[in-house]
Amino acid sequence: MGPSAVGKFTDPILKRTVLWEEKDVFNPAVVVRDGKIYMLYRAENKITTFGKASRVGLASSTDGVHFKREPAPVLYPANDAYKQYETGGTEDPRVVEDAKGTYYMTYTAYDGKLARLHVASSPDLRHWTKYGNAFAQAGGGKYLDKWSKSGSIVSTYEPDGRIVATKIKGKYWMYWGDAQIWLATSDDLIHWTPLEMAPGEKPPVPLRAQALTLPNLKVVLPTRAGKFDSDLVESGPPAMLTDQGIRLIYNSRNVPAIGDKSLPEGTYTAAQALFDKNDPTKLLQRTDTFFMRPDKPYEKTGQVNQVVFLEGLARYKSNWFLYYGTADSKIAVATRPVE
Image (cartoon, rainbow, N blue to C red; front, side, top):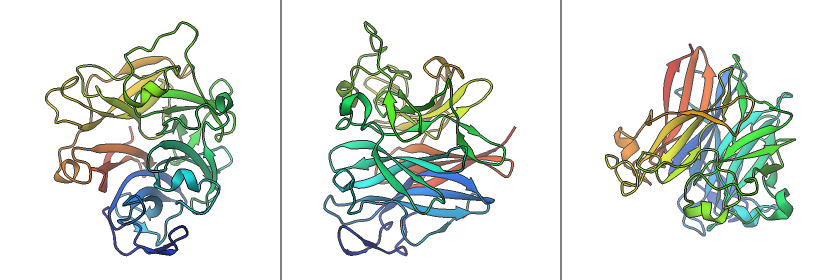
């Protein structure tokens, strides 16, 4: 799926008609509902205060490949309580549901300078209630103005395609972050508390970039010097709870000077990690190399070159459908049979 000049939308902040997905579409979440795959995807227009803005659109498919788009976005910056945080866009959704069938979306609110992890819920994927920052109440609000992104909630991927958030030891768990990968817990899928290190505990690797602003958090999946995931690691689709453990697909960026010298500067690849099903902080295994890298023209060249960014995974019609953004410009899918 690529950008489109068909979708039109009256932006409530700009008070004008916007071709809201004419520039780029990428980084989708997916949900199986009523026998279809529904995709919630990030779309950018060309003109705003910041030169562009991201909104979340909705499309549906009966085969997992060909999608019909809804004409207007379903989650977007508006004149609401969260306007100041979302002026630059609502980005990069991940979606799960609870046992009662209510959907919960984690997404990035961007104000032009700072990314914040926000939460919204919906009964039908079209009408969303925003709750603001996932960490607003944690630690007396000390995380409210910290950089946070990419919330991957531990869930069970049911045979009927539903992705159901599942408690472990009485709590919901979420892998998050785009410098290192951290953890947070919740009682209600709305208010989250990041896990901090124990007294005297040290990070497993030297902190860099945005991780320097969060020095007390417990790193559960660190970057690795000399490898493809040298510069950053970032959560992918909702983490999968299985009998073997919690499978986390993650995205990573490489810098040849400190990482894999065979990959171009800034290359995003995807890999996997396995955590203990009873202790989400305990890393059991991790792949030595990536299982997906940019190798198609549309993955190598775009708004940001050399990017495959995985965010959506669906079990549908006896296949796994893995959806990802390509070069921050288009949406692609990879498939394999369910074993």
